[in-house]
Image 1 (tube, rainbow, N blue to C red):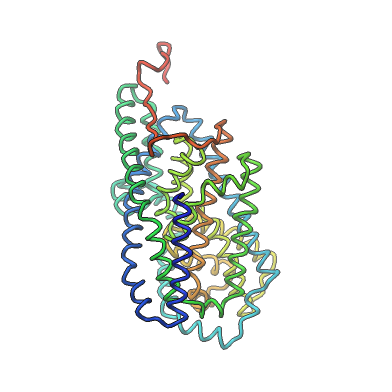
Image 2: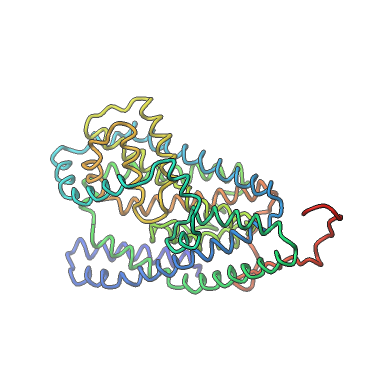
Length: 447
C-alpha cells in the first residue's frame, strides 16, 4: 500500500472517530484522543528538526552545483515571478467568490456578537502580536542575517536561505579540490537527512489520525455551522485554485497531465493538511519533488525552501475572503480601489507569513488595516477564529501544492524531463564531479 494511501486512511478514520466522540459526547474517547496528541506533536517535531540541515545542505549543494551565477539568477527570477503571479491569481479568485456569495451577509447579528465575545481574548492577543511585526524596510533588512547560526537556531528560514545562497555561489567559484570537499560533505549531510525522513514518515499515518481526531473531537461541527457559508467560500476558492489554476499551469508550463501530477504528489498535501505547517512539510515536499516528479536537486533545493518561506497562495486567498467577510458583516463597502488594495497587500503580506500554524491570522491584520478595517480587526478576527484551524489546514495544503507546481515549471523550463526517479534504495546519491572528471579550463580564465 502506498504511503499516501495509508495517510489518507489515517485522515478519514481520525475525522470519523473525532466526530463520533464529539457528537455522541463520549468524554472518554475525547480524552483518549487528546492524550494521544503527543504522538502527532512528536511527528511534527521530528520532521521540523530536519528542516534546517535539509535546507542548508540541499540549497548549498544546488546553488554551488549550478556553476554559472547567471543560471542562479535565471532560476531565481522565474521562481519569484511564478510565486507572485499565482498568489495574485489566488487573491483574485477569493475576491470574486466573496462578491458572488457574500458570506458576511448571511450571519445574523446575534451569532456575530456571540462568536466575537467567545474568542475576544485570543483575538486581542493576535492583534497585539501583529502590532509588533516589523515594517517593510525592517523585513528587507532582516533578510540579511547578522548571525546565520542564530537564524538557524531560531528557524528563521528566509535569512538562512539568503546566507546559504550567497555562500553556495561563493563555493562554486573556489578551487576545484576545495569545492569538491565542501560539496561531498554537504551531499553526505543531505543523504543522511533523507534517510531519517524515510524513517520518520513511517509514523505519518498514525500521527495524522491523532492530529485530525483530536481537532475534530474538540471543535466538532457547532462552530462550523455558524460560519458554514464563510468556511465553504474559502474551501471552494482553495479547491478552484488548487485544481483549476495549478492544474492549468501544470498542463501549460510543466507539460504534465494534471491527474498524473496530483497523483504523484498526493502525500505532500496530506501531510501539510495534518501539520498545518509548510516548514514542517518541507522535507517531504523535497523528497517527493525529486523522486516522484523527477525534479533535479539543483531546482528543488532552490525553489522549494524559498516557496515554503514566501509562497503562501492559500493564505493570501483566505485573507481576501476573510477581509470581504468582515467588511460585509459590518456593512463597510469594498469598491474596486479597496479590492485592488487587497490584491496587492495580501500578495505582499503572504510573503512575510511564517510557514507555521495560523500565521495567516497575524498577516490578515495588516490587510484589514490597509483597507480601513483596523477598528473592526479584533472583533472580525474573533469571528473567524472558531473555524481557523480547519481552514489553516486546507490553505497549507494548497501552499505546498503551489510550491511543487513551481518546481515542476522551473525544472521543465530548464530543459529537464519530469520522469520519476527509478531507485531501488530510498536515496539516490548523486556523484560529485571531481577535478579529474571536469574538462580543463584554458589558462588565464576563471570557471
